[in-house]
Image 1 (cartoon, rainbow, N blue to C red):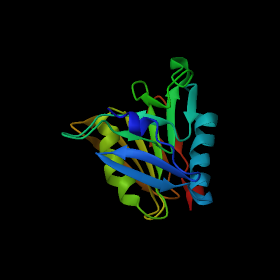
Image 2: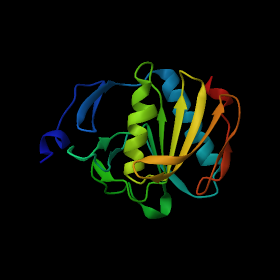
Image 3: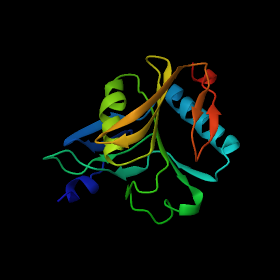
Length: 179
């Protein structure tokens, strides 16, 4: 049914996602975007007590909305407990079971997709934690407790303030260097 999408090859510099029944094609991220991703990942490797693995741009198959095909979303970052060995041997589009957290850093334009649409997708998929670094508003938000297609908990801090991340990460994320 989705063979056309799974086998879709995008031109270099673009990536395609199928979200809420719509095909979204986005450009490769800019340097500031990748700087924010690297700051989160670096802190995760240095500070979390759980042995975690990170994958940038890993395709995830999530839930779907009524009348739409299954969402195929590419987070900027996917974090999983290393003990689960989810990435080894995974298909390009893997199920989201076992994913501990996804990370999105808003692009130069189109932040609504990360703030609203992908948030609903990750909640429908049951991803326990969604970390959003919003460059436009200069806030970092952690969404947790997914239920009924959205997250019930939201903790946000302005860039420069620490954000407490729960288990399995269990450390205060320093957001000062996101500016």
